[in-house]
Image 1 (cartoon, rainbow, N blue to C red):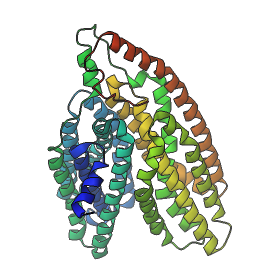
Image 2 (image 1 turned 90 degrees about the horizontal axis):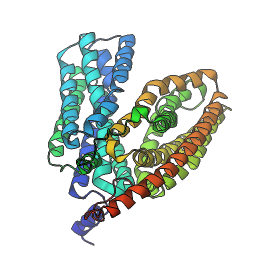
Image 3 (image 1 turned 180 degrees about the vertical axis):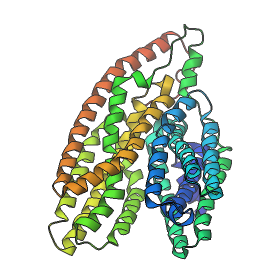
Image 4 (image 1 turned 90 degrees about the vertical axis):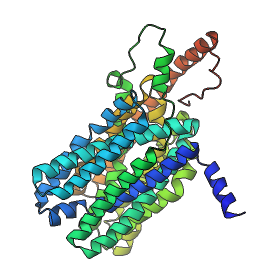
Length: 440
């Protein structure tokens, strides 16, 4: 088979058409730029702007807390305005905020610019997820898996290039990494301009109800079951904190493993995500199948926690083997959760407020980024037996979420059947031609 035919065959397997493929390039460029900067951010604030370690911690913590508001704000706007334009706005906001960091070494201004960047970053994550759901339709789970694979590849490429630049260690090298991230956002914004605006379920619902009495859209803040789902999601995102914060600190403070194992395990994590995310996505193609993934997810997390406890039993080789097993198990927990979380967060959201609901769901990952490291460091301080306790907590959370999702799906099914019956009785000529924005 010729190279052009292979490329055409590969493109045909990617949902979303030309815009879907273009968004994958945007994700690759965006994450490569972010990978350049994120590994150097703390060092830049310390070595270039002259902040103390305490000031750097405060800056990163406060800006991250401000960023939590970005997810619901972006989701709210996406139900009312074209999502591509909001994505471009977020990309440009990040570019300007990062570029502004080069203009000052004043702590207050650095904190302001970092908070503005964090706000746009959290919002952009929700907007990208929403665009993927709308452009890929029923194949959204497959598309999200491809996009996550591409994003991890971008992170790896950016991180590698950033490591080479950090080896130089000069002020200009740090500034070059920051400018590289700015350029990535500008290129991504230019490419996003070429993307077509996908149909918005919320605006379609509003248009179809134009002649009917005005009914306020669904409000996620008054939807108790969706809020509880979001709370359980925050706990299931803990694999991220364990992998990025817990394992490196555990290696240094509690095991006989060499310190150089930590970055190698991060590389292993990226490789596994790139290789396994897409093949495993077929197991979460419907809400019911996504719910079924919660059991193996919990099993992987428990195995990872048990391996971390075993890594302290003595000996370098045992520690290395146990830590490697922990990284592999927690990575598969991460992969399975990404699939289940992606499908369920969309499937449980009503069509008339899809963006607002995804914005609320985005709070779960933002909350984990703020509170996860604190919880993980507390587990490390408590000692080896605290890891199984954390695993037990995840089992309880999974059981609660599984029951919650099952009840909500049962409750949604009659409502979906009634809507289809009413639409057929009304003789809607396009009912059979329009793909449903939610697959159950």
